[in-house]
Length: 317
Length: 269
Image (cartoon, chains in turn cyan, brown):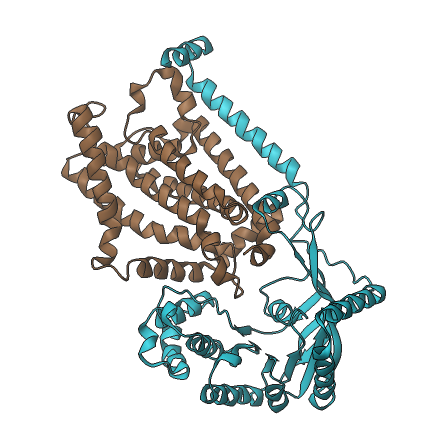
């Protein structure tokens, strides 16, 4: 059964930086007249249940964008994204609240995932045990080391019964023992037939753990195949890429992007019905008129005569 | 447009258990580090009411009764009880999405539920304060009237108004942070433009209509009418019509903005 299905997915980010530009967004149609960055271009892929997929690529190739897209945090501009099941994502920046303690963060996160108190209390010991950060569980997150944060985030994510688990470079900050425990847990998930997407820069981790590897390059799938096929090729690419000077690397990127643009086939426009509100201007001005009319009725109803009103206002000054 | 509004309302209903649990957590965690804990929810407004009573009631008016037979403190309490809720819920609700952006953009969460759980968490304090208001009314020997039946209507109206306002401004503040400061000053001003500390009867008749242009007027006077026995809802129909059209406008604008921008909140961090 396919758990994740992407068809001709394109994701663009608006490059708004200043408040002025954000303000303009209020009145303009989005993505028009605004500089955009295409993070993913026309991606199609399918991941079945029980698959363990590694995601590799150099910085800026769209790995995190793809992870976020699958987990439903961000939305595609074009194309279809179909996800069958609950997704848990573990990233380096966890979205934990730094003033709350570890225990409170677990509770808050579980509440936001829709659990009730009984269920949270049932899962709490398991999560704390897995995180294994000792007394720090009752300390605010801001006192945590990056390793501890990552352990807590991982512990929460693996204990919430997701069908799809995305690990976005989160294991790189943990030590060897924690890493081994995570791998054990992920192997457990693998045996239960859950889908795992593993984003990492460590090729040895990928080789040990994944059966299939997807290599992203500047927002497109460069290669998609078994670990045995893809990893050596990616490694060769990395070696040659590293040898390039900075200018040559930029040139390489430019060439690739140009190539992509030439091959680009416009994906079918996916305009969500929910996104486009018909004639908001008319409806809002209609309601504005209603407010105006009701307001005048009210004021006139209360005011004996307008000459007395102007007198009263003049008297105020 | 109608469909989108239905969607927002449906999201509220479907997520209600989640909203209620988060509201409870919100209020508990806010006072977790304080010695007196939840008691502050009553101490804080209590101290403010004392100051207002002292300055405006005793100091400026010599503790005279309002409208002949209502002690000033009772009269003040009936109005200020709803103002505290509106002020708190409206400011926090409007800032709710902006405040939680770092957290909610790391997971999938129904965005339209964020203002509502923040508003609902203020409802607990409101209920507790209403209870105290009842006790004070009874202690002063003011008889309850059938007008009390109107109170649930005015409470619902307050909740809906605050939600519509917060839905609209939570999106706006996420885009333009200045609006939050503007709102704070506006609310401070509105406090004095609403008949909480003063009685509208003391103003010349001709200004009544203009003062009613403030939608909070309807709610404060409505609470007072219910608690102290004033006008029936239908006697206030022009003000009611105006209030509901403002609320509808806010909800429509809020829905439009929320739907248009909710998918891109993540990118605006």
